[in-house]
Amino acid sequence: MVTTPAFRRLPRAVREQQMLDAAVRVFSRRGYHGASMDEIAEKAGISKPMVYAYLGSKEELFVACLHREGTRMVEAIAGAAAPDLPADERLWRGLRAFFGFVGAHRDGWSVLYRQARGEPPFVDELTMMRARMIEVVAGMLDNALRTEGREVAETELEVVAYALVGATESLADWLADHPEADPETTATRMMNAAWLGAGQLLRGITWHPPAA
Amino acid sequence: MVTTPAFRRLPRAVREQQMLDAAVRVFSRRGYHGASMDEIAEKAGISKPMVYAYLGSKEELFVACLHREGTRMVEAIAGAAAPDLPADERLWRGLRAFFGFVGAHRDGWSVLYRQARGEPPFVDELTMMRARMIEVVAGMLDNALRTEGREVAETELEVVAYALVGATESLADWLADHPEADPETTATRMMNAAWLGAGQLLRGITWHPPAA
DNA sequence: GCGTAACCCTACGTACGAGTAGGTATGCTC
DNA sequence: GAGCATACCTACTCGTACGTAGGGTTACGC
Image 1 (cartoon, rainbow over the protein chains, first blue to last red):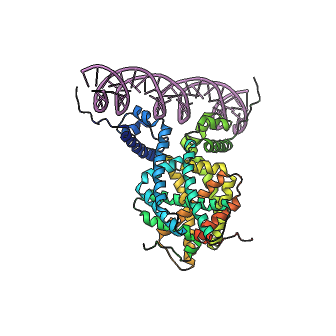
Image 2: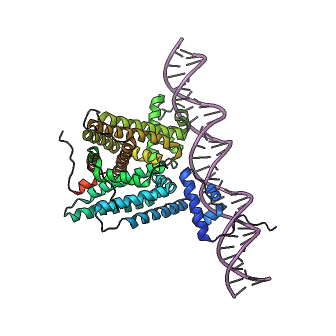
Image 3: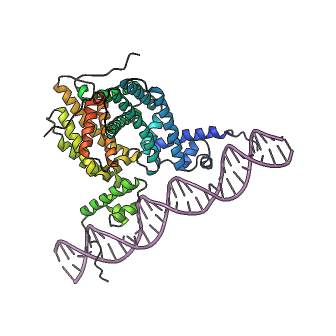
């Protein structure tokens, strides 16, 4: 019997991406544990053993998702924040790139970063990514301080960086949950909160994006 | 055979608390899915059917934990931030109460709030708690604004509140992961970041707790 | 001291889902 | 067109852990 096969045979690299796409969607909807390999395979239009053959165990598959999405994100941000700009300008560009990314990948963000938080096997991977972000932010602050000839203990910087990154992630969640919201506006609000602080906002002082 | 029973029979209310204590510990160590009802029962010094008889399914048990810990926390904070104080004072007291609570309940916090984030069945419960916190913070900001005769769109306030709460939660995680860290100091740092913002911190302007 | 209601147990049924065994078809190289 | 590697499938095993059936024991009222 020579029925036309519903789906052609495809090279490995292509199928792997399809699987990852499906996995991201399913993980984001169901959560890590709620997701079944059967469903992921089905959504990818392939059978389960193929997934195991290409991406390994469920855990490895999830890490692969996390890694792909995380790398894309870090690249998007790093590309935007040139190191030879003043601190506020750098912060602004970084934030804009970040929220732009999240806005365009709501599924990926909300699923993966929310999932990976508590689960023992993934904490490491996620922590690494956060650490890189925090390092970037702390480095930025440190850089700005040195320019002005001042200096601050490392822990001090780290904690402020933590707060900034946490606030940003929180707004990213907000953005992921509000499909009608605009990334650019969200970034502006974040910039206001982070750069000026509640004290100045309450006094009516606000920050606006540069005209350029 | 009349062996002295290893553990006396206890009234329901007491056993329920013991079970919840055990559940919080186990959930926090293993994560929601990693935790088994058998282990929780064992740690509570009771057998599994008792847990089911008193607290219902695993899901209900987790929600019960979340609820208890959350209620305790909200009460601790609400009790500290009197509504008739200036905004900075209220914020400071709220933050101090919050970090004090987390410092004293590192297990409870890190486990429950980290766990509940991504999992579909618990998102609602957690969202409610966050919503209450955000409402409190937004109300505080709004209050401060009215006092000065100014006004701001509700979304605007909500977003700033989101950022503040997110930053605070992030530092709470940091605190939970650094047993040597001091809640009071952490609260001070948070106050600096939130009230003054990165811009002023970089210029060397800092905030210090009132002498009282 | 006897009934009844509460507390509490051991031992099981069962479902779900990760991971695999073993085999088939297709296309590519020579 | 023979050989071979790669793509792909159906149909299974099996562990784990939720939830329960069914029965024993202690206290308390009367």
